[in-house]
Amino acid sequence: MSRSSRRFLSGCFALLPILLLFTGCAPAGTQTSPTAALRSPDPAFSRFYTQKVRWHACEQSAQCANVKVPLDWSTPDGETISLAVVRHKPTGRSQGSLFMNPGGPGQAAIDYVGRTDYRDYFFGKQLQQHYTLIAFDTRGVGRSRPAVRCLDAAGMDDFLYRLPTATPGSAAYIQESRSQLKAFGEACERKTGALLAHMDSMSTVRDMDVLRAISGDARLNYLGYSYGTKLGALYAQTFPDRVGRFVLDGAVNPALGDLASTLGQARGFDQATKRYLSWCLSQSNCPLNGKVAAAGKQLHRLIAARQKHPLRVSDGRWLGVSAAVTGVSQAMYSKDLWPRLTTALRQLRRGNPNPLMRLADEYNGRSANGTYESNTTEAFYATSCLDSPVENADTSAAQRSLRKAGGILGDFWADGTSMCDGWPISATGRPGRIRAAGAAPIMVVGTTHDPATPYSWAQALAKQLQSGFLVTNEGDGHTAYSTAASRCLRDAVEGFLVQGTKPATGLRCR
Image (tube, rainbow, N blue to C red; front, side):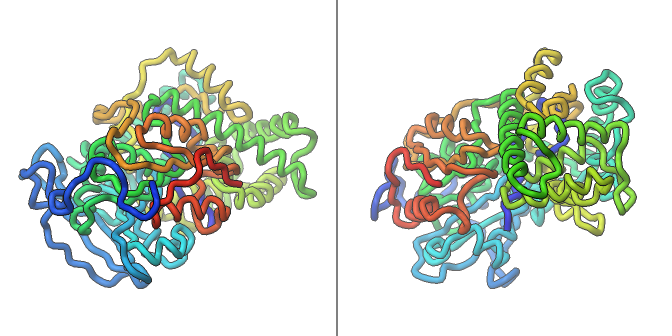
C-alpha cells in the first residue's frame, strides 16, 4: 500500500493543477491531574466533555461511535455537529489511546484504524499491542455530519478536469478560473450552510481535546501526518499541559504564508520529479532519454502539448494539462508509484491517456465508476481558505517566482490564479510560529526528498517547538513512518510512542 492517498497542505496562492521523551516514565512538562484533564478548560462546554458515547461493532474488529461537538466553539449553547470516530482495542496491556490523523485537510480517517490492511500498514505491532488506536473524520469530512457538500459527481468532474478555453496565465484564463472558483465557493455555501464558516483548524483542535477527554486520557498521544502535523502543533500550542507522546511526520511549517508555502511545494515537487527522471533514465523501459535536464524538457513538452491537443479518455473525459500534471504529481508521493508513471508516460506518447488519468483520479479520489470516494476536495478548500488569507502580492513577481521554483513543471504552477479567489467566507486563521511552551517532547520527522512537505519545513517546525526534536528520514516520497519504513525509523517512532525513549540527537535513518 502506498501513502499516495494522503493529501498535502497546499498554499492558497496558486490554483494548482493538483490539490495537492525519555525512558520508562510519564512525559515531561507541566503536570495536570488526570481528573482535571478530563474537564473542559471552559465550564460552559462541560456537557461535551462529559457526554456518554455509545460504541458499536463496525468495520473489521473495530468499534465506531458518534461524538457531539459545538458547531461554533464560541457558542456553547448553539448547534452541534457529529464526529465519526473509530477505535481498535490493544492486543496486549493498554497504556491509553493513540490518536492518528492521516493528513489533508479533508482526508477521511476512519479506514486507517477500521480496516485491517490500513491498520497493519500504518501501525506497527508495538503500537497495536499497547494502544487503543483512534481515528476520526474531522468536522465536515467523510462520515462526520453534517458534511461539506458542493457539487455532485458530474460537477466535480467539470471543476477538476474542465479544459480551459484560454491559455494558462493569460488574462482570459485568470478571469475564467476566478469565475469557476467563485461558482464553486457559492455552491459550497449554498449546500453546506453554517458549517462552512467553522471548518477551520482551530475548531478541529478543540474537537480533539473533547475526544481525548471522553477516551479517558489525561494527555493526548498523537501520530499526525502532513496536515495532521499542523493540527498536532496547534494542539500543543493550545493545550501544552495535555500533550503526551507526539510524532509529527511530514511537517507543515505554520509560520509560512500561502505564497511561501506554495513556493516550497513547487521546489519540492521539482526535486522529486528530477529524482524520478534520474531513476527512469536508469530503466530500460523509460520513454525519455538523455540526461535529466533533457528528459525534463521532454516531459514538459509532453504535458504542454495537452493544451492544444488534449486526449480523449476511454470514459469520454479529456486529459488536458491540469489532469496530466496532477497524474505526474500523484506519482511523486511514493516511489512505489514511479513504475506506474513510467508506463503512463510511455502510453501517453503513444496517444493513450488512460493510465495517466487513472493516477490523476486516484489523487482526486475519483472511482472508476465516476463517483468520488469522499468529500476530500470540498473539505480541502473549506479548511485551507479559512486557515490562511490570500496574500495581496505582486502577481507578476509571484508568478515569476513560482515558475522558477517549479522548474520542470514551473509553467504549470504559475498560472496566475489563486485557489481561494472568490471564496465566500473570509479567512479566520493566520500563519505564525508555534512554540508550544511547556509541552512534553515532540518528535518531528522529515523526509529529505518529500515533495509535498519539504524537509526544510520539518527542520523549521522542530526549531520552533520549544520541546521539538528532529528525526530525519533519508529517502523519497511523502512522509516516512509505516510498517514498510526502515527498521531505524520504525524503532525511533515506536520506541518513542511506546516506551517514551527519545532517540539519539540528530538521528538520520535510511
